[in-house]
Length: 300
Image 1 (cartoon, one colour):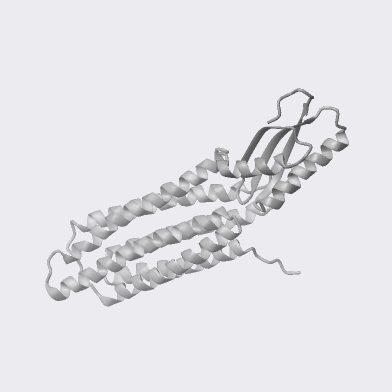
Image 2 (cartoon, rainbow, N blue to C red; image 1 turned 90 degrees about the horizontal axis):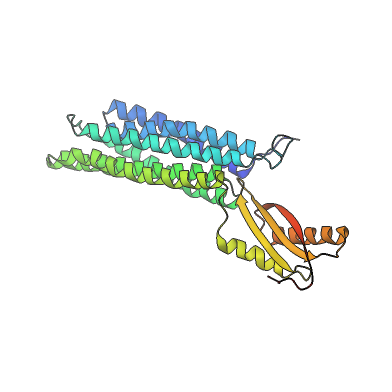
């Protein structure tokens, strides 16, 4: 039977194909018509190719089952890829910023309609890719797909800058406005800050997961409420939960009557696990530790 690819891998693969086409198109047109912002935008897409390859590989790795060396699975491979994309976004922002700043000190080239059309095609395609890839990434809890979506969003900003810069240069050339050609590098500097902001957000999310940050408090409260509804639970001693790539691991310590048998304790553990996983389909593992509770102890 042929192997089927996951939706997140398909979305990332489509993004890779489009990035190759856009990179070749924009660098070629930008060099032909001496459009620095379009060349910079094309180089940005070339960096996206590397980032997308990293996301594609990590998405495949993250779906591998647990083994002796990785008993919790390979979910964090996607988080590592997301961190790599954040670094590449920051480097792309530096490149765009450098190209934009340097353009202020060079004679402006005569604007042409073809670079404007290339920027417009890139804007429409990248916006569509962002919406599609983010929808797939959220639906399947794929960090690598979401990272690729953020990368597409950064490219939308870059394409907007190219479109505005080239468009104003065309308008200024027809109207004899001396400052119009320099709208291109000015817009590029603004986009640099926007891309840096995306890189920071994505990098922070990846770092939080790698550093085992707890899930939001309201999610833990929901888990606690579900556990406390079981009749045999006398006390909840601790609840922790962390994201492990595309799924969540929950760690629970509860108190049950000390005279219960091992069989009873085992059944309670299974009930806790089932109730939490039924409530939250993103939970992939529930670790339950049972503490003995004696009559007279405080219930919590």
